[in-house]
Image 1: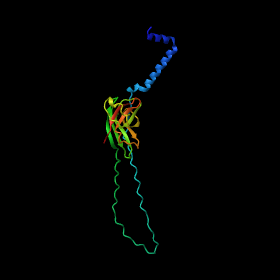
Image 2 (image 1 turned 180 degrees about the vertical axis):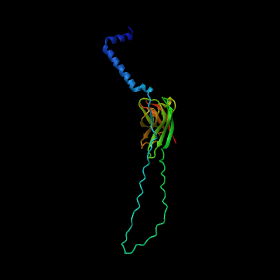
Image 3 (image 1 turned 90 degrees about the horizontal axis):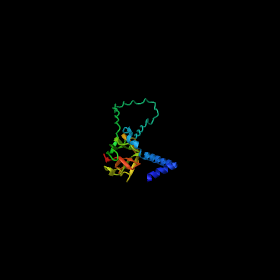
Image 4 (image 1 turned 30 degrees about the horizontal axis):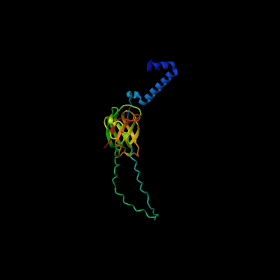
Length: 218
């Protein structure tokens, strides 16, 4: 009797062994489905966000000029009539300038890594000094545990560039909102962007980049 036949014979003789094998197989399948989420190969989501606006801090109003002056006691004489003041032209109110738009600090084109990816990545500074990372026309694949990372790693084409973004310094801006569209991600005020020169759509579960862009100063 060969090994396979012996195993089948043992399973038929021991129903508990058969049930245990079924439980182990089901558990292994559940773990694989949780980790890989293969259905995400066929799902997609789109989000279109406008460029955010921010108002500059208001300028405090100028102090009002003091009114009134010292009074004099009445002398019983008729007050002297003063000549009417010369007419002066009143300047028309200045037309307020439209608020300044966001300032582009850096930008770059998204390239494909493990999954086909495209779009533009831009770092914007708003009028109030806050900064955002913005994707425009992003198009990548859906996947498990996708994050948006600013990093100091170089952007390398091909498989050699898929796994480099957690080798050095990185700043996690949060979960990818959608795998397609225009999206904004706030950058913490205290973040030093001096050496964060790339952005990656990073799959944290498998430590691989779906797509990335090298950010060049504007």
